[in-house]
Image (cartoon, rainbow, N blue to C red; front, side, top):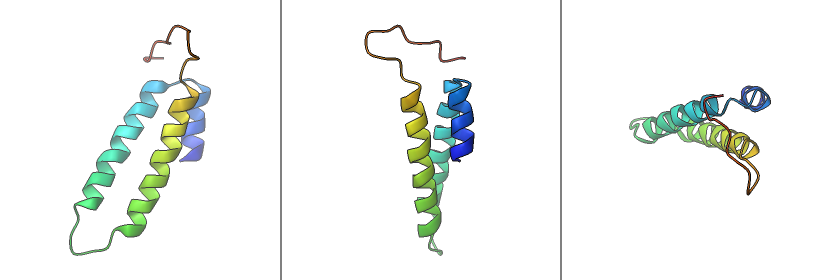
Length: 73
């Protein structure tokens, strides 16, 4: 996940990071709704991935006082 996020950050692809974050949040919600098995390890893995993605999005934030970049880049 770190390599994927680093690649998106390098090419400044905010949209791809947001899409990835949305997908992983959906997977996390589905895991948390599972019954009959213990998804604890998978939930922890997804939570770590979410932290990595969110850190990548932070790197793409424009400095205070600057104009925001087009998020479609």
